[in-house]
Length: 352
Ligand code: NCD
Ligand code: ZN
Image 1 (spheres, rainbow, N blue to C red):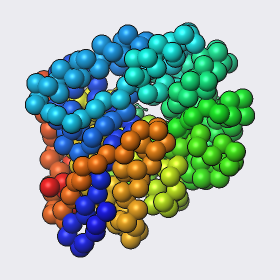
Image 2: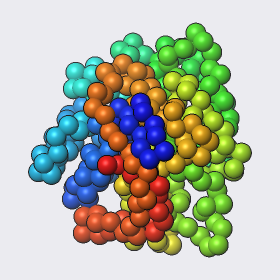
Image 3: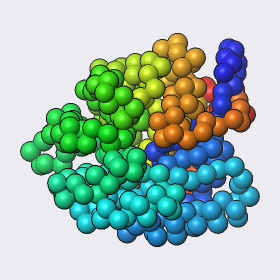
C-alpha cells in the first residue's frame, strides 16, 4: 500500500456484504459495484429468496449475463443461500458443490424480505451441524425480533440470546456477524475466545463508521439514512471506527449497500437500506482518514475478508485520488431512480 497526501494505492478490495437485487435494476447496481470491487458476497434476500443451490446457480447466471452485456470483466459474484426453518443438511453439500460460499441467517421479520427467515434456530441444528462439518460459513443478521425488545437494543440482545449459545453449540462453525452497529458487538468479536480463533469475524458498513442516529432525525426525518440494523449513538460509532481501524483481522469491509427505488424510501412506510455502492471506497477512506488510520484501510478492505473465507487475495492495484467528487442526488435504477448515500454532498476521495 502507498499513501501520499493526494493518493492512496491499495490492492483492489472486495465487498463481503452486498445486495444487488435482480432484473433490470441489477444492471445499474452491477455497473457501480464492478468499478470498485473485484468480488462481492451477494445477499440472497430476493423475492422469493434464494434458498437452494439450484436457485443460486440460476441467480449467478443472471448476474453473469448482465456483467457480460455491460462489458465487465474481472468481477466475481460470490453466492449465498438464505437459511429457512426447512433448509435440509443435504442442501449444504449441494451448495458447496455449486460454489456457494456461505449461508445467511435472517431472523424472521428482522429486515427487508426476511419473512421466510428462521423463526427459531433450533429448527436449523441439523443444517448448521452440516455447515460446521463442511466449513461453510454462517452469516448472521444479528438482531432479535421480539417486539418487547427496543429496536436500538436488538443487536446487543442477540449476542446474549442467540450468538453466544450458537457458538457454544457449534464451536468450529465459521460465523460472520454482519453489519455490526454497537460497541457490544465490536467488543464481543474482538474478545471472542482464542480457541475459536478463526471462526468469528464481523463486517462493518460505511454508514455505521460515518454517522450516528442523529443522521436519521435531526432537522427533519432522513429516510435515506435509515437502514437495519439502525444507526446507533455516537459512542457506538466511535467503537466501530476503533475496531475497523485496529488492524484486527476479524473486522473487514461489507457495505451492506441495499438499494431501494427513491419512491420506496420516500414513503409513509419507507424501506430500510442505504445505497453506498456509488462511492463506497471513498466513504471508507474518509472514515479511516478521520482517525489518521489510512494505513489500516488495505487490511480491512482487501486482505482480512479473503483470509477469513480462505480465498486468495486480489493482485490488481487500484488508486484513490484526493479529488472532490460530488455525489449525485439521483442515479438511474431500472425504470426508476435511486438516491445514493450522502447525495448532494462532496466526498474527498474517489477512484481514478
Ligand atoms: C437490507 C435490504 O434492503 O435488503 N436492508 C438494510 O437496511 N440493510 C437487508 C439487510 O441487510 O438487513
Ligand atoms: Zn444486508
